Length: 178
Image (cartoon, rainbow, N blue to C red; front, side, top):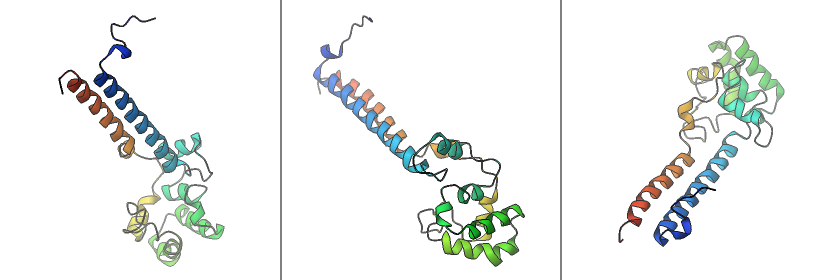
């Protein structure tokens, strides 16, 4: 057993409160992190529930296909292209080199009908618009997963940082008469 000169029960009430509240905020940050992980990545493989396959597909990618193919062929966007023929047309277009001519003749209308309600500047997926050939061309690259900077955007990072700041500031003020 460790013999520490400090025991939580022997600390001042203010210091115990600061430590307890910091731990509660850290726990809330962890809970938010788990919820974010689930809601962000649970449909990456097209199956319900969060699995290691979801995380592998999100963070490592599916390097044998393009970003678009990974999403519509068994991925999280397959549900929005319910017709197998429509998915096949897009996949064939990708395999044949993603030409502008075929895009304008066939693919553009498929995306308009099935994808534009979210993939437009005012939609839920505004960061990935799919309205022009140039925009769609961005998702015809090999799927290498999410880049590391994207991972840093989540709220749990901020909550954990706030908890640590709270702990440090609280310890400082616990040693004062305030």
